[in-house]
Amino acid sequence: MLTSSSDSGSARVSGGVDVSAMTWREYHGITKHSVASLRRAPHVLDWENMPDPFRHYERVPVLDLPADPPVPKTPALEVLNGVSGSGAAADGPTFLSQLLFYSAAISASKRVPYTGYRYALRVNPSSGNLHPTEFHFLTRGLKEWPDGLYHYRPSAHMAEQRALGDLGMKWIQGSAPVTFVLTSIVWREAWKYRDRAYRYCLHDMGHAWQALAIAAHAVGCDTFAVGHFSDDEVAQSCRLHEDEWPMLVVHLHGRSIPVREPYAAETVWYGGQANPLSRESLAYPRIEAIHAATKVSNSRRHDTPAAEPASTGSGEIKLPAPASSSRPYGEVARMRRSALDFVGGMQSMSFAQLSAVLTVATRPFSADFAATPFIQLYLYAHRVDGLQPGVYRLWQGRAELEQIKSGDQRVQAAGLSLGQDLADNACVAFSMIGDIERAVHAHGDRGYRYVHFEAGAIGHRLYLAAEALGLGATGIGAFYDDQVHDYLNLAPEQGHVVYHFAIGYPVPDPRLEA
Ligand SMILES: Cc1cc2nc3c(=O)[nH]c(=O)nc-3n(C[C@H](O)[C@H](O)[C@H](O)COP(=O)(O)O)c2cc1C
Image (cartoon, rainbow, N blue to C red):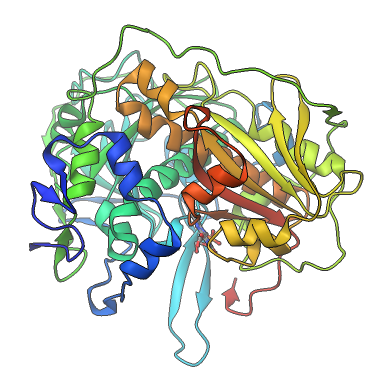
């Protein structure tokens, strides 16, 4: 059942905005946090109506993915730096199991003291642990695995077989033996974050994409992500439930994929019945409007075929040689967690560790929207040996830091992140500033999605690099947008803050199990 949300008004006019013609700028402006906006619209969570974080397509054959697939042993930092892993699986089921075990599976659980309530955590992080992202995949010619369309069931590490045979999906370019379709169920996030939830779904999508791309690389293959596709065509051809919106198509290729000779097979559709996620789903017209505005059919591409290059500059501080780590990728990916908080105090990270983290975070991405980066990193350095406390802008092309402000930034960093201590007790916190104007100039309003995908993808690399180096990390989606711009002296044309992040020494979380 779909009912109207309390804060979004009617489908056409919401909060004085005609949502039928909403642009990215209006959506972004309306969903900014400020002290006043938070005070104006307090939100009480309806726990009885919390969406199920697990989607099942029921009444379809379910295929086992082998438990405990081989551990990719190449050091995580090397994988993040572009080294291709080895030890590929011998057959399709093991290959798929490896990919998903290291990119989307359950990896731990937490138990709430007093109530005893236990909930699952996954390899990929998610704002509020609400997990809007679903993993679907199409296979063609995988060894010992029937061609078809599948949906990953993380709760049991199994594949739901939604269709068999060559499905003739015209939007799949080339001959990739495996193509993932990553979808978002925005209601899962909107339940908690309301209109701002679309932003978080896009970040989560960026994390999931990178989790998949890095897992693929760790087992010796490459990926290419496609953001420019017909939303409705992909949704219809995969027969997605209407609450699932396709966001990214990721093709896998490379010699390590265990393939067989293709053979013609009859097409059989099982489809499956999607489980209802909650008693009722509230409608969020502003989210529907921004999603519609960023569809390829509506997203006017301007004359520029590719994004102009990012602006360049320089800084007075050269990044030192990056620190190394031999921790295997398999261990790092499964152990990654978000820190609840960091220890603060005097414990610092080295400048070489920071350099390692920044180096991997800013390597190029393999995607049709990633010819030039849209994100620039600003750092609030609190405790980094050899780097004075202050705010710095990273000029990634030159691997240089430019000092913007000097002095202790801890109070400001936490204040800008909605008062979260994480950003103060960390060794370093980040503001990711997205050049949405340039992205939209190149890709139409669809560019709004791409900037957030890139931010989430950078965040995922930060998580893994931090974990590899014995540190911890946390993505921070909650910040006071305009205060960040003011604090960093950013003129509107210099970009918009889209994501915050923090890295440091995590405090132990007593709720964590396994
Ligand atoms: C886009 C995004 C935004 C997040 N924002 C916050 C935040 O503002 N504050 C916070 O404490 N954690 C934040 N997190 C961390 C999540 O709460 C965490 O990923 C989730 O609880 C699952 O835990 P795990 O990362 O250990 O698997 C964010 C994570 C993501 C991916």
